[in-house]
Image (cartoon, rainbow, N blue to C red; front, top):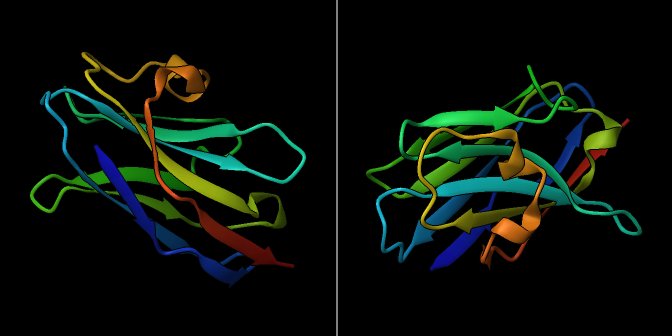
Length: 129
């Protein structure tokens, strides 16, 4: 499995940014792709995920209503659309995947990073205040 991220950058507070995660190599049709983020000196935090069995999503309370995860299955890309960004969203964002994953997304998908076997290289998002 390969995960390649793109789309990070610098944005002003209140602005928007979209991250992309191009994926390949899944053996099973049912899997989950999640986004985690990390600030130096802090633990990695689960942000959002999508589960392909039913295209359900789950998001953390810190981003709910502002961030959306969706997928273009034909192009094998998962997106993280981030709106109304604030300084606390500044972090390196990682795309990660678990396969197989059956059923709807459950909160564990963004709370237990040990589930995930593959990680992208990371994309820096910096929000200026």
